[in-house]
Image 1 (cartoon, rainbow, N blue to C red):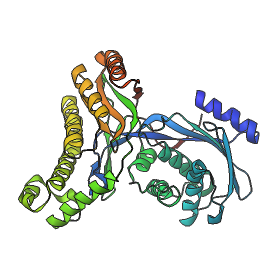
Image 2: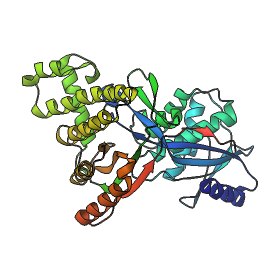
Image 3: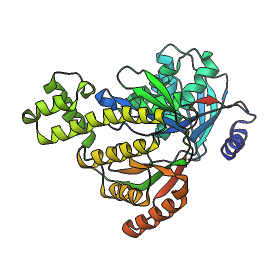
Image 4: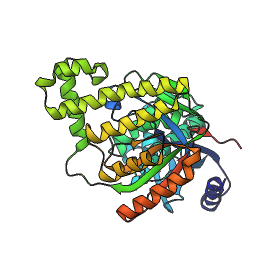
Length: 380
């Protein structure tokens, strides 16, 4: 394994000897976008792109890190006042502090890490990094006494308290709970979850990264969240999770056209996640694909978080006969996730690369992904 070898050589060079290897994965979300803050369902899975670390306790109260990908080092103590100035090191510092705040133990250690999770493609490399270290420090210093739910929350709290990102739980949850050949339906309200087998013979999951991210003048995520909250309040419910289209149509004249469109998408998306799960259980891949296209349409027209490039990628997928395609992530750039029949895999990649380059002057990045295990100790 090339990644492991690279890390091993760097560890020997920086710290001498060897440590224990751990890894955690990036994630995709097949369907269920902008549903997390509305109390709905998401449907993520861990993928075969990981952050991997070699770690060894050093019998001090100091943490020494080396990032292979950045060719950079950082050292820090374990008290709140010891926060490192390097942004990348704050992810690891935050995990240490969140474990300690919860009554867990963290002592000094030396660590080298690297990854092959593409940056900027919406695959949650930061959640993979947090989950890798949370899992490792739980194993090394706490005898695995911290349960998996808490490990996911440790990663989420790290984002909130040390990295300035007010994220939901999905990314860290998928990184910690990921299971090979399975997607996870997570209820964002109760945190109940269920695994669904996702090993579909004859199809591949392909991410097409537009490599664009539009700079936005306002805060579109907050505005959409506020729309959803206004409609829920008008309906007298906590979140749109408890709404249906009949309820929404009954108050249509009392709310703005924009708020109506936002709520319409969220209510439809809640039903689509459940529809995809049912279709997978039946082996009905065509329905899975159709619902993915419906999600893209809703994100583009009703939620208005798409952009020209993503709509173009979606149109090309449809023209090529791709079974399902949609924006993945918050929108305004990033990538599409595509359910591609093996028979057209190569021709789709060739066509979408050529057409996108012709239109926008640069090629998209293509990633085939396989649903894999999440955070783990590497025994071999």
